[in-house]
Length: 143
Length: 147
Image (cartoon, rainbow over all chains, first blue to last red):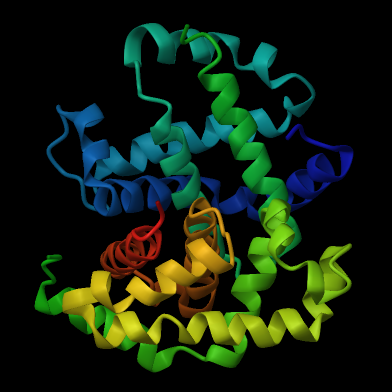
């Protein structure tokens, strides 16, 4: 299910609309994930505050979402472009890839909450495919 | 048996009390057909599904979306025994409709997105958690009679 030219265009256009709120979206998506899918907290065993407005959630949400925004500019070669991030996730974090799907879902929910008119079904399918491609690139070095 | 807190029950009842079936049903079904196009395999008799525009203006899709959404009423009214409440519907989807049960999860995800878009910020993380727990139980119950 590779990204078509149309998918890339939809993703770029939509990201243009949301980029001003990217940090907040990252924070909320991560926060939702930690609450709705509590098993994901195992990767943050050193954290003390898992609430939506916790400074830890805010900072990490921004880190993750910035990397995803970067990936928008690398859609022509995600595997190459995300190679070092993939090494990091494979060797250091070793996050089970199922969790990439879980975070992706929570990003989509957050987008729907804040951009109900812009997040049309056509945008949804393009962004869903994009996040799946990002997830695959992130897991590329796992084995 | 699934254990529901009072807060979870209240959240679920609240979502349903605000749900506009004629709006959310069609939107959810349209979205699953557009976002996961292989789901169109079950709707060969629905006519033109060749583009997102065609799907969104297809009256059979809209009508069926309302039917499917009302199917959730059974779960909302029988939260303490969703498993048995859906036994017949599960058999129907397996034996007669031959629907891959993974599709229930896909539709559930699209419905979650539609409800999130309609409710906006009132779809808090706690509400989302209750809703996703509810819809996961429904998906499991619908998948249960497959053999």
